[in-house]
Amino acid sequence: MEKRQIGNSDLYVSKMGLGCMSLGTDEKKAKEIVHTALENGINYFDTADLYDFGRNEEIVGKALKGVRDDVIIATKVGNRWNDVKEGWRWDPSKEYIKTAVKDSLSRLQLDYIDLYQLHGGTIEDHFEESIEAFEELKEEGYIRQYGISSIRPNVIKRFLTHSSLQSVMMQYSLLDRRPEEWMDLLDQHEVSIIARGPLAKGLLSDKMLLKASDKMKENGYLDYSYPELEEVIKSIREKSTDERSMNELALQYILAHQAVASVIPGASSTRQLLENIKAVNHSPLSAEELEVLSELTKLSRYEQHRD
Image (tube, rainbow, N blue to C red; front, top):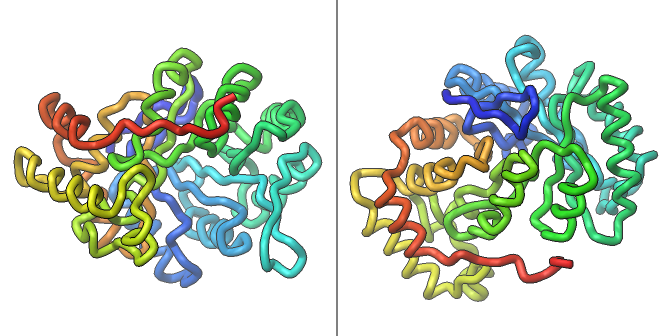
């Protein structure tokens, strides 16, 4: 599978990684999914300390233990479970980041993390403190590179101008094109996008509107009312110019943008994973296909948290 560089770093990742949040807590099943990913050329695995109270990191670490030098392992920090694990609070402090990294390393059974990401962020954060923590962790050898997971424009701009981050993880799909506004700026700073949520909660998979929740039927999805959603998904399916699946259209649209280093759909089964691998290994979209998809969908804009 094609590999792409994250930012201007020494990290080269498969153009499709595995978003590990959906692996679940069945260790045998999760290991099967991870090993299927490896067998098909995926070298990028993305988890977080928040997932399943850290259990996800443990499972990912065990599954990848024998191939450490061949993979890029990413995790996240900043969401701190309370003592009884009923909820979490946001803590981007230097003290917490430098403690949490050691807990993640222990669960993952690693000596270092390839890409450590701040799992959110607000303009009220003492961001200098967070950046200082990441820079020190790099110097100390606990992490190779760092990034943020945020769609908030003011947070992204602040980190771009004050840190040496290499990536910004953003929700990005044909139904959520907000990251496209920031591609030129990210390119100027040599920072890559890691694209999560590429299938828009399953709406852009072959199951399409069968994945729509009752809440979605009532409120729509982002800038789309439910009737608009029905219409745009129908149009995408009808306007495709060959026998591509919805998965292919959705994933190939994102990968057509060079700002994207990797797209990371989740997978709760090997079948689902193999469908997505087939989709990204298909031929890229033509200029005409890209134009049609762009015309059919909304170029949304993130209206909050801009300044």
